[in-house]
Image 1 (cartoon, one colour):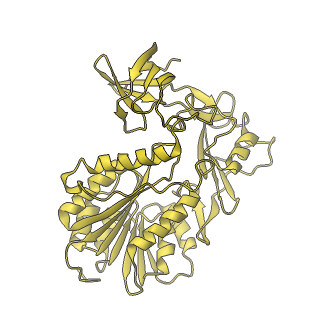
Image 2 (image 1 turned 90 degrees about the vertical axis):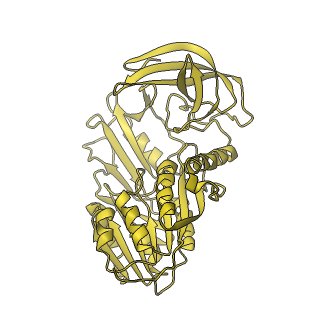
Length: 408
């Protein structure tokens, strides 16, 4: 196998020393750090090594071809595409060990900051389903309309018959559209796990299928609440685990009917709607116009919700009074520094931080701890079984006396 601008070696022996950031294991070869796909720490393997440059930087990666000394945690990957397709990193690792590795990854990031050493990190909450959980697929289209994914190491295109992570409805749609989508280079399919509604983008001009495409939105239900989700809007890919996570967020907030809570990075209003039942007022902040339009429909008839369109780092300074609690659910890059500064100044009693990236989470928590907060605990949530990705819920409390809804 060869990649563009890559030098590929024959299979060579490697000892896998530790876990890497992308779910790979780390080995060393001739003074280079090698990111090895398909291994487990402590194993000795035969691997094919790829040396390549991207943006003037040198990278060395490898694919396990044969296991010489297997880990006790190794299992046979159930997917026939595992390896050629790099979308799942951990199908070869038994699930209980995956959960431990995710907790370890969170602990490792926390320990990089003196302020966070000793922060309680709970056991990883397992996913209700280990497979067939994804409600969203982004397919690459190649080779006269074939649907599949590009391997991130070899860059080779892998045509799929079925993806084990996808909800069955997505696989049915993929089977119907396979080899028919040469009018586009990418295809997005989203489904409502609890509604069976679907969305396909972009609009396709296909006579060979009865499937509709180009839908502006679809509907999903969470905890018996309906949510409209437009094509550009973010929505968690694991519906069942999102319901579990939402219950945990609500429990951590400990809201009362006379309290105000801010839902920063509110998206289509998932947390906003669910918090409104327990809070006196919810102020939701979101910069995506499409998401705010969805949220306006999702929150219709709920009187104690106020939506503000704009970037959180700008809107948070326009609040009339300090909130009692704040939910943070930013993108993978984490919070803007201005948001953290504002929270330290406003000092809400409680902050619940939902993060999909332990590295940016730890960075932001360290800033808050230096300010006016204590991290009570961090709970990893397995939103993405069979991959190295991990969601977290961090619960913080103010170390200062909270004055509650004070003007500023």
